[in-house]
Image 1 (cartoon, one colour):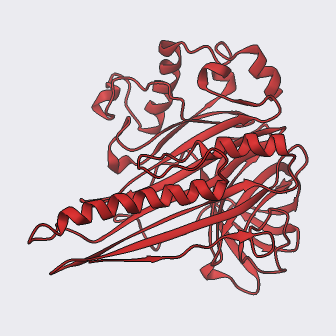
Image 2 (cartoon, rainbow, N blue to C red):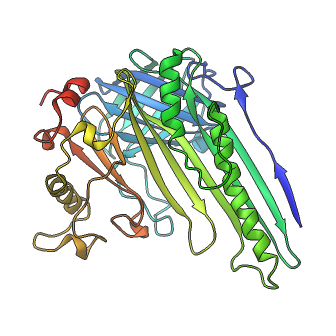
Length: 391
């Protein structure tokens, strides 16, 4: 017997979709919103994109203008005290930590201790144990950038067999251009975001579908696939082993929004039985002013051998491959290939690989940051001009 339980959360205007420019209550971090901040950390100019997903949980990225690669921000405000919020930071290229072997008692090294006001963030940045503590001063700013709104769709299904029960849940949370963005730009950005969601099943959005329609179709495809599998399982006297709960999540988040350039990521997780789930990320890089989604060939001469030499050198550093030892002794490839899954930012390009692409599942997602000055012989002049690079 199949019994479906469905629910959805759609936040539209004040009731459902919370635009990025909505005020956050003083000394609180609640609700669903997306904000862009500029300001300084330790006196250095920074740009911050922060995405709040409810329950005092938020994630985001930031970078020092023209000086650093992207850094991840992660907040789970269990330790809030008198309105103070602790936000951990890490390089976007840091290798993933195995949760089973991680030291739960290890101290944070780089973190923010801040207070959120109506349209600003202020506090202290703790860089390393024993190092000086620096001042953080940020304010909301959408100059040459685009504000975003929030949308979410969740659904689930319960399966009941003769001797076993199972269920599946799926969720897609993400952003869309806020109502203040002009229609041409909003439509272009929305199309790029929608392209991050794959539709392997029968449910496909209509040609005039909204962002929420795409998120709904993504969720429904997953659950329809689960129900089809469940029909087969119910024909057997022995349930699948293990049945467990199937889960699928897709989080669509902003990574970079400056100078009319927008980079959006879809970070996904899928457990459909077996020893472990799968996860990965997909990115879209949009020149909104030029109405172009950048592929690698749009920004550089795709000389596979030349790019791989640069990526191989970076991989050797990341995986500590000794001189004279072959990369394939550590990775799943003899040479790191270029990929169209990348992130453009002020200082360089981050090439992104899902588990099993170039390394084992245990190594997680691999991200290799290459500064523009190491690619300057390959970069196309029009891209250099568009990004305002000085090489």
